[in-house]
Length: 542
Image 1 (cartoon, rainbow, N blue to C red):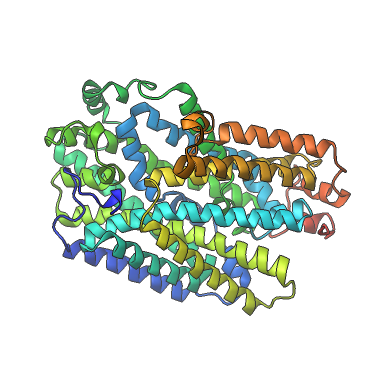
Image 2: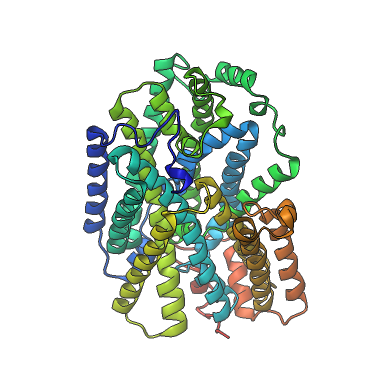
């Protein structure tokens, strides 16, 4: 039996068995998601991959927020801050700063390039089918690792609400996710993400305010009123206020940097900029996304302080000795420790399920588009009909969903660890080629491919070492941690790309014009892409 199923002392996910009101809330929510998926079911690839480029800035911002507010954010960030104190803020700083880089340097530029997927960008920008295939496989790898962490969160919450075994919870909620994503594609998934954001942020805030009021911690603004609680927690354990009491500077900087560049390299985040009609909407989507994300992240520190106090006041021992299941469910556990009504605790748990479903939906869409659009249509059968692409895309969702479900039954790490590993791959492999591809017109096909191969070796090799091999008795992890390898990997990959690009032939002139157009100061017309503006000279493949 995996660690996540062990019963904690303060929060036992199996305690109480089936809970009627929370179960009704969750079932109603799942039925609503399936209904939205059916109503917005798609029959065209534009709707399946990029929602017909019809999403507005606020709706896309909510979808960005829901896409981003995974089970790791909803459940895991509060536990990281509770257990690691200031060190846990590396996650908030890293994830938030990454969005500022996206806003300033990448969102509008990606939209101007005007493709369907992240591998599509690499294939056309670097005029290489091999590069497209490599990027598609990396996308599938990231989606798989990231989604396993969400599966763990789903199983945990289903176990608490339905009183079913963890494995049954994982299978049940994965079936629902696969069902509505395969049916509705990006269009229905985006509509559901906006809905899921409302549910998850509502549940999160209701729980936070209810704990603050019932325990006398806060009244109107818990975001600003938990200073006394932080001071109380600091008296319990020094790590809450001493940033590097239990971890060194290198680890903090490596974690923060990896999360920053990983945010800018995640395919399911970047594809959101392709679902809008122009660059201005892409930028405003990012601004709204940052605002919606802030509403949750700001509250995680308050949850962490409340959880630590309630845990110790309840006589369960030091909060730093929480079990794995307690840490993974800190937000829900806090509402339970505050003796809130069962239906309210269930509502907070349902919010976690909504968060996980939204992220998994985005991941499955990107995995599906990588398999059907980038691999099948661009590399195997160029004259594939829309019907064939839809079939391949839906089969890809089923296959990825099956693999994720099987792995999530016995996950190799905690939720936050799995998510961080996905960020390390994205930050090391994708961020350097995306950034240089958009801003340095002399980046060549050979440079991009060499960089991606080095990035895959570093990031995936470090993960294999951490989880399975343990070569050098921890020496590799000391320099290249599996969950934060981008601090070393991203600059090294950038160096490889630059050196190889300098010693190989320049890119074709039409590709250089596309890159210049991506950051030209002159505004573009709605729905135009850089290729439309420079005359439709599409780069040829190798």
